[in-house]
Length: 386
Image (cartoon, rainbow, N blue to C red; front, side):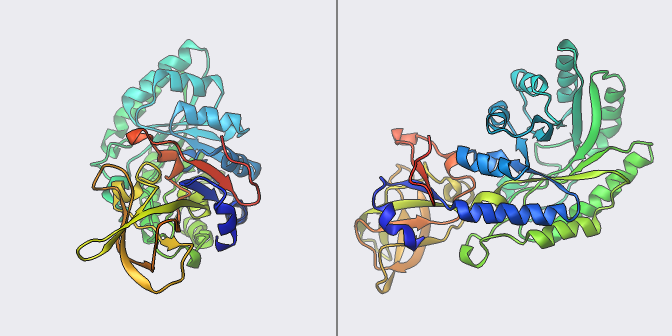
């Protein structure tokens, strides 16, 4: 990144910087490791919907995991095959469902009995059959932040096993529904692979429950959730996909001809992006100084929302380190990127990089305080994004 500092000076801060070479390398690793076992990978568009990034991911032949109608449209616009598009989400609107039906997407991940009924009615009206997977709540603890845990009975996501008999009864009367799979997702930013082992064990039990009722689906979707190294990104620019996929191959008991699907987002794009900002002021504090930068929670909300930690680097200084609270300009006390951080002596005009911002950075940005939307730039090309 330091190699680009002269180029950074030409851009108005704050902006997102994407290392497309790293993204390409990451995608190749994902492709190589998943293909060892015949696994199918769908990119979770909610992590980053930047157009050049979508185009590169699509070029590797991956599918798309969407959670809104606009994400389905973005996938189609980026030439993702509809036959590889899955649509999840606890609150799909009628228009979004119809968009999926009109484009003959691969699968709807259904999260409730009422949703199953609505999809059946809409598919019947347009004279087609909807392929669905039941998103089942496995009640597996992902050992992650409670805001991004999705697989417990207390969460809003998925269908609980105690509802499953009623679901099967509804399916028997749903002539415009074709059950093709089971879907699971236990959470996000999971760094302990044992959580995925626990998921495999639970899926095996649930598969046996269906098998005892003479139901074998063609597809098992295990979701995503693999985390990245936020505190030391340079030590692990590419997550350990080899161990991740091998674990599922070793512990997931599939039936003959069943295909296993993954929905990876953050693990693919997280490390390729950084938020580049400029120091506006150094303000003296009681126990620490404040480095006030021109990026804020409007450009990267994760620290305010999840109390997440991102590595922060001063790209302009190599002086003796001092202690700083790195904060943004937004009129909220939560607009802080880190407290009591040791950084090289920092002054007005220094360039600051907030690392690992490729996932849930640009895509979650807002114009709160009527902020100007930050632009995006890419390694290897001077052109800015739309």
